[in-house]
Image (tube, rainbow, N blue to C red; front, top):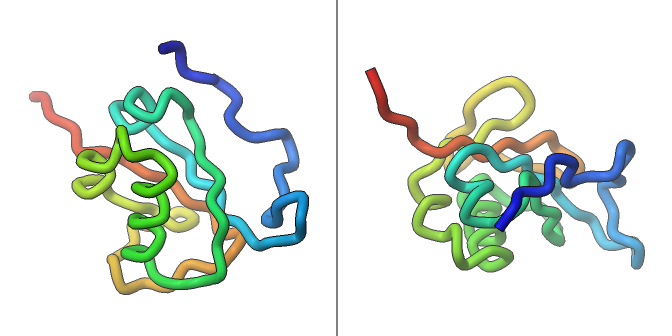
Length: 100
């Protein structure tokens, strides 16, 4: 399945059309391939990186195994599973890489 190169509108809001808070997650490499998109938007009422990882797994079960092993970045830093995530945070999912 081709991957959408532009997963979010230019100014995607941190709320859905019905006003519910959301988090946008940019997906890279194998996670994007498994999901068939370079980004997911999930409903979000707050929580930790671990909670966000579970929400992303529910939104895209095909990528669940890889999401469990991927790094999560908030803004410009890697985050731990117990770090808080707020609606509207800049989130990136970076799968493990290999090579020499």
